[in-house]
Length: 325
DNA sequence: CGGTTTTGACCAGCGC
DNA sequence: GCGCTGGTCAAAACCG
Image: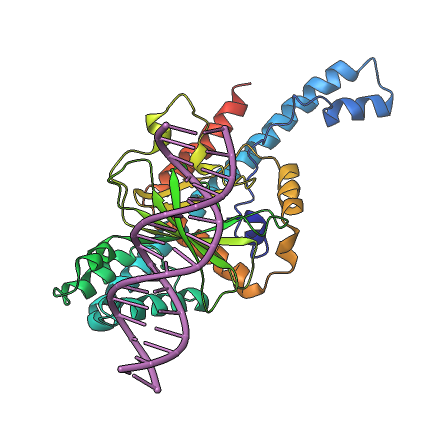
């Protein structure tokens, strides 16, 4: 997931996580003092200007805080509205939604159609419900079908544009590749992985490049890990391997244990330009792809009821951190 | 030497 | 029944 693509739709929060710039190496106040040549009064003017600037910054931070609170409220309302709509729709159309077909392959193809249309922004939240419902009606199916009951998640990972051959999605887990296949609707091969961290872990992963934008890897996870995350087991390795998706600073991961969201608030605006330079492919991808990526990201964020809390805590923590200096 | 990757073969679902 | 397709298996190759 790349926020540079999201920026095109102005979904970024555009947060000023460094509101106080008074202690930078080159504060504008001192420059102004030097430029006016009032060296004798510079110290006094600087103190007055600093206090004035402090008040101004305080007002600005307060307004931003208020703005953020409003945004969080709107986001929560949107989430609730979206969720109620989904529940209402599912209650009205249980047979359509829960059991599109009784056949495995058919259900997946319909799933792909939803993905390509870009309308189903809730895709990936919990396709397992529909799958399990469909398989419940087919109890005579072979044991292999039982794996369908597992939850299915889909995540999108942008890779280096120059790297068009790798099918590696770094999500922190250990995967063993057991197959590769070229599918009909996509010239790029699809790789099949099994979780090798635990011998009994049933989770499988399919990785294939997007047809529309080959710099985007589509990873489909099936099942839930029956073991803790490797980063939690091997804490010494640390450093959030799971969230280091290539060089992308911000990412979403729809893991089986629930969505894990990282907002790298430490990145300055200058770094966002670096992100853009990393993925010049953004210019060539279609608006549909970008819109879908944004919708995927938005759904990943809004689906987590704790997201607003975490976001507010992170922002307030950053502000307080800078205020304490 | 053990784990991983590659790759052709095989199997099962589905449409005609 | 047959062909197409996706998913999986398993032997060989590869690698640290």
